[in-house]
Length: 342
Ligand code: 5GP
Ligand code: MN
Image (cartoon, rainbow, N blue to C red; front, side, top):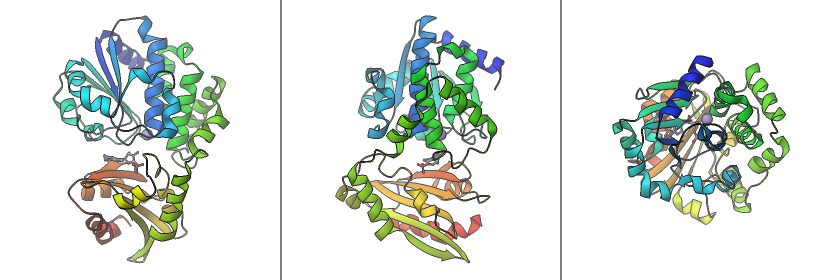
């Protein structure tokens, strides 16, 4: 990242007349933090320099614990159903599409094909390994903690004075989320320089930690208890211990599941002594199974996610959506092939 890239990005924005900014399905703090920061920065800076239509898209339900990030600005976002209703027109009209925290158009959901077909200029701001070649301009760094960290550097080069405390909070939340409260993906000093700047700009560290990690509905804690007590399995595969759990829609319904309830639950499956790979298989509806995969240290799990489930992600944290298999079939594929990663 340097001034030249930032200038180029600024030019793309200022030359556009109809902009779409979108993040991935199953949004996490990094996705929403980046989007909320982009929206507020746009209003503070770009909106004063040009006249354009801009749509911020969250192609899925927004979990309760992330709602605070867009507080007071809700009407500027198209969330889930609003997007499903209006997405086609918005994608067709756009002359610039900015995708953040995703490198694979399949993660936009049902409008992935519209994105691929669109003649708009396509910009990517992301920290995932490259998947899609369809972008005209890419700000990608797989060594940073999060898209939020990368976006901070980009926005600082454009107009540091336009980064206010709301933006600082959103970006701090993104970094906190993607590093599991500074426990992984944060071994570079530059992450902490960015964090120091965010604190200087007013990020409320205690409040954000409370909102993200100490604010779970009772049902979520009960669901966690159920997973740990009844569902989590340990299996020995070629002398290596792996863990996994499954959840069916029926089980989710029993605990009044809402999006976000299972965020971070997979870490319990991974943080067992002797376990280096963990997986979760969650049936979100009859034909969608969401898979999360985690690994420790040098064991890479993203190629496995891609080869067996058509997903992807980071070396130690990957995921996939599977539409044509049962929970049992997914578990079977996992257990039969996971030995490859060791
Ligand atoms: P999670 O398990 O938290 O849903 O996802 C972990 C990571 O896996 C994400 O940060 C993302 O990099 C990647 N990921 C999750 N789902 C998908 C997917 O459906 N496709 C791809 N390519 N990557 C995914
Ligand atoms: Mn991220």
